[in-house]
Image (cartoon, rainbow, N blue to C red; front, side, top):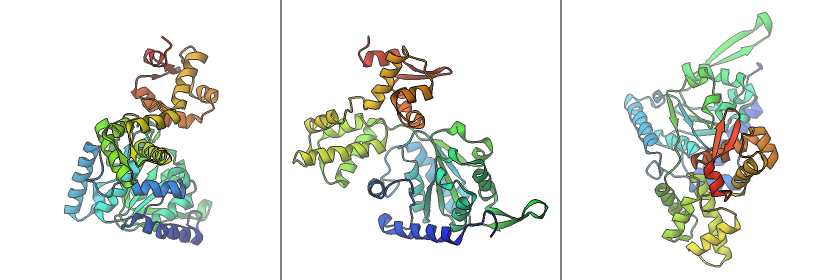
Length: 357
């Protein structure tokens, strides 16, 4: 076996996982989400839209995708639309885009997180399992290691896989043809992607935070799927505290559903929703306890900042990457936090919101 040839056990494991996801998706697409536990993964799949018409928001992105797909299908070559890179904060629907894209062209979606493709054998096994027009979705693609990233270059450009065998002067490169596929990469840090990888994507699109009207529509749809009722005011309350993010809308709907069941009612009234959010410490802006702790720490411990990311994360006992990827984007959008060359700073607006002035 060559140093980067996939093992038979890996191939069998990959095939088994694809087969196991079929009943959950009830479509030709096969979704592989290795980093979610089974219950959470099933919940996300249940709430995920089944068509582009059901996909709320991101109108510009949907139009671009539809134009690319339509043109490619007219040419009789779906993969000719090119590879797609989606960037923006987590929870805005990047995985859903890949899933719907596969449904539109009638192929399969293979979903991975970059850290799960750490070894050369992993990415080789994935590439060799693809069929024509399949979608390969790699989340957190900025976290690919250098070797794995470079192995992707020939498949992305020429749909060929270069396998090496031997050592030193006896090293040989064997080029294997691959079916044409579409790589959809997702990242929260566009600047961390190397230029050679970034330049191999045809489409580079930003995922925008959602407007409240779209989140209200999503909340009502989610409530219907979860089999409970939301009053108009209650759905607006959920949307306004969703941080512009559909994933959070869905999470809040599940919390409200459970709290309503605890109250022995199937109708989530404004009063029930407000009581639930008070219990879960989610305020009217959608800030949670960790958001407020970040701002309070900057103000009280560092005189408003600047404070370095690692220092701030250590002070509040939070992972630095979680703080940077999940909490900071929304705090910056609200105007409560600034990133400077010297570190993070709390704004005058944050002082006012927390009652310091």
